[in-house]
Image 1: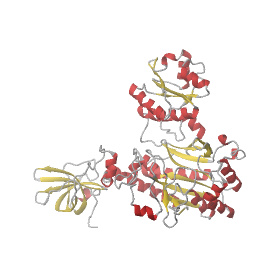
Image 2: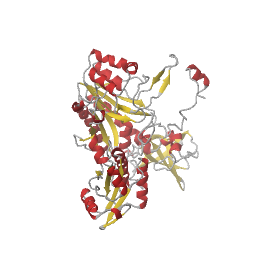
Image 3: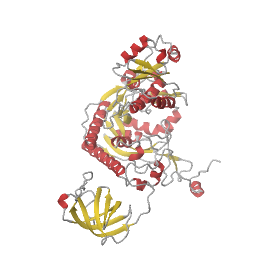
Image 4: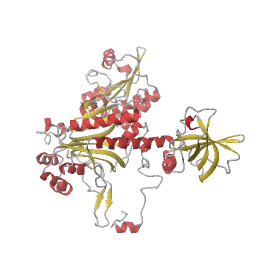
Length: 575
């Protein structure tokens, strides 16, 4: 390369050397006969000193230039950048390419709208924070590959064009020109293929793979996402968990310098819902949720009494802060977003009670609340009353929001845990039947093997999720390898025989030729990198993401195609 150094490389030891640098003009400052220019590349910034004799044209921010010059010691040193002890006395400057005025400044902490940043993503990616996010992602990928190579895993690719199958999220479909009226499906995961690798004798598989799900988007979802996928033969849940814990320990050590204490904490799904209202609890703060039916069994508070009489649940937390009216309005909105219309509260400060239900609390209830939550200082009690599952979900969301409002979260902390023993089935209101909560190839736990298909509401899965700072970053399960259990599972989810044969016949047939028992897991690389980078959403760690509407504002994908292309695929627009 023509350049001799990057813009983040030169130090005091380089003083006196002749160098060639190339990069983007970051900032220009004119001081009398001298012009100071900050030259930027992804490695850092170097200050240039240009005299009037050298500068032969009017450079502007974001021009791409090349300079030749001598490294000199800087009189006013800048301790905030790696090259702050030196500057370059420029002898020759060449403009490689000019630049128009950019729609936003190329710097961190800008206020530009996200769609503007996504429309000009190539400019957004020049900002140091965005480049650091992608560098972190690259490092994570390398750590993962090296770790699994060191543990004798084989990296194998699976098809992108696959077969659509029922269950799970909606598939993205791709029409086949050569096979009229037939469609490929983009994979939601490589689940079936990686299980076939185990049958094939490739006992340790992994890949970093693109997956696709047509579902509503949020801060931790994209229509296309990347996961670390793995499967292990002759392995149980314990083997997979141990492998993943070792990987996460390496990632946190190499990326954040944090020593992860192993083994990680484990919580049963039912306990996670009871304590935190979520199967992905954030353990960086306390705020344990309590069911308060017993404490309010003699209550005169109307909607508590109604809920208890109806067999519903009164759920509550204590926040160690006297929340403001604005705080409570925000939390009420969170409750409503989770289908609970009333958020009751009582404030306790300087031995005085106030709030929406404070006047209705009797002395015994007040004393019981203080004891139940082990209250030692002032704060605010928050309550919801509804069906247990709904009240838990709402209070889980309120818990997370309240922690932010009370400034209880240490953003530099990383808390990981396993949530285990998930329900095997979940009730689908839309289909009016039980469906597989994970996928229909998940092994039931040993204690419900005899009854999982007759007592579906009480059946648990040999499944496990790993959670970090309130986000599910991965999950897996023990797979069904017994044909009889697999047949019972299909019957339990009321899958017709013709549907089983059409969608899974090719897969089930493989089990007739000798299958080892096996377990696997998948980690969401986007979510892991989002958390490691302290980004607000996964779009910040993906090079070219879609916005919250599933659109790429830069290329305008998805877009219309012409009638000729549709005709070749035997597709017509619905009128």
